[in-house]
Length: 597
Image (cartoon, rainbow, N blue to C red; front, side, top):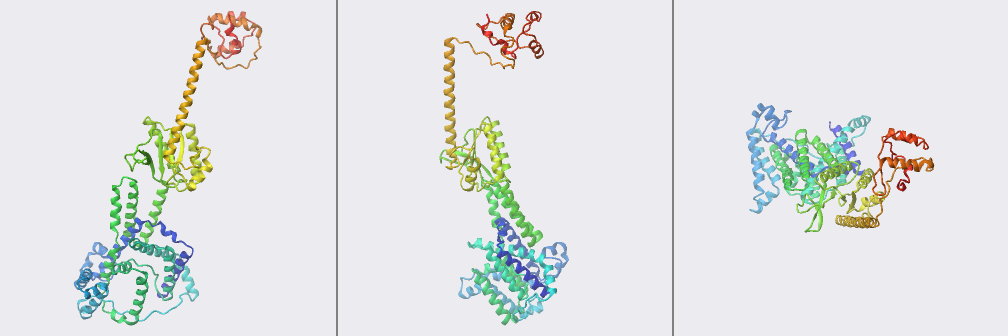
C-alpha cells in the first residue's frame, strides 16, 4: 500500500505541475468570494465535528462521526471515557486562558507564545503517570528517523498501476489545488496580500513530486493546519513551511520517543481550536445586511444563495463534492449574470446636472418621450434578446401612459464589448425605429464598442454621436435642436400654404379638377362624338361646373363596363338608357367638361 500510495502521489504531482506549466490556474477564477467562504466555513465545521469523537474517548469505528453516532447509534455513547473528556476540557481551558494572561508576567508570555507546545508537554507528563490507569489514549510508538528516498516507478507492473490510477489522480489533483487555493485565498484576503495561483500550482506540484520519492501520500494545504498556524501567529511562508519542516525532521530524528505519552485528545483539541478561525459566518451576515440597499438587490440575493449552496454541498456531500459544487454554482451565476445583465433606467437630476439611475436616486426625473438607459454588462448573443424585450416593454408602457416614445438613448459607459450577433440585432432594431420615426442614439461609448458601432451602424446614427462620444445630455440637446428645426420647417410650410390659399381666394380661382385615374384609351378615340356625348350627359345630371363643382355620380362596376363598351357614335342608344352617367374610370371622355355650355 505504501508503494502504491507513492505512485499515486507521483501522478498527482505531475498533473499539478503540468497545470502550472500550461497556466491552467484560471480555473480558480470561477471561485467567487461567497462560494469560497461557504466552502471554507463548512469545511471548518466538518473538521471540528471530526474531533469530538476522539475527544470524548469513543473508540474508532465505521459508524461515522459524533453526529452519526448520536443519531443512528446512540447505544455507542455508553463507551464515553470520563478521563479523556476531563483531559480535553482541561486542554481547552488552558489554551483559552493562557493566551489572555500573556501580559501578566514574562513567564506567562513564553507559555502563551508556545501555548500548543506547552500544552502537549504538560499533558504528556501527566499521561505518563496516569494514562494507562485512566484509559486515556496516547500517540504511542513513532518510527524514528527520516524516510528513505526511492523512485516509485521501477517495473512494468508499476507503469500499469500508474495508468489505472491516472483518472483518479487527475480528479485528486484538481480538488487538491482548488481546496488548497481556497484556504490560501481566505487568509490572503484576511491579511491583505495577493496569492498568485500559478506559484501555488508549481509549489504543490513540486511538493508532491518530492513526497512521492519519500513515500508520502498526496500533499495539499491543510485547512486545519492553516488554522493552527494562524492562531499561533505565523505570518510568512518561512514560519509556515521551512521552520515546520525543520522541526518535524528534528523531532523524528531525535525526539520521537518523547511523543509516546502525548494524549490524542489534546491533539484533537488543538485542531478544534485552530479550525474555529476558518469559519466565516460574518461574511454571510454581511451579505444578508445588503438587503437594505435599494440598488441591484438581486446581487446580494445571488451571492447569499451561492454562499448557502456551497456551505450545504460541503456539509452534506463532503469537501470533495462541496468544492466542485461551489465551482459549478459560481459558473452558473456567471452565465446568469452575463445572459441577463442589469438594465438601469436613467433620469435627469436637476441639482447635479447629470443623468443617473432612477432606481438608485429618487430625485431624478425622466424626460417625456425619451427612454434613456444604461446596460451594465457586455452586449452579445446571449443577452441581446433580453435587451430587445426590455425596450419593447418600455415602449408599450410609455404608450399606455399617454407618452409615446420619441427617442431611445443607450448609455454604453458600462458596456465593455459588443459581438457581431448583437450588431445584427441592433441594426434591425434601428431600422425598425426609423420606420416608426423613433430616434436612437448612443452615449458615453468608447473602446471596442465605439469602433465597431461606428463601422457597422455609423450610417444609421447621427454624425458625432459615436465619433465625439456624446454624453446623455448631449444626445438630449441634439434631439431638442432637431425637434425645433422640424417645427420651424413645418411652420414655414404652413404659412406658405395659407398664403397661397388666400391668393386663390382673392383671385376667385375655382378648385382644381379632381385627379382622376387616367384611362389607357387613346385621347383621340371617338373625338367626333365627344362634344355631343358630353353635352347630353351633362344635361341629364344638371351639373353646372361654372357655379358649383359636384363630383360625377359613380356607377356600379357592371354598369360602368356596359357604358364603356357602347360605340362612341351611337348616341341614339344612350336615349333609352336612363340614369346612365359617365364614371370616373373614363376621364378621357370628360377632359373638356369644364368647357361645356
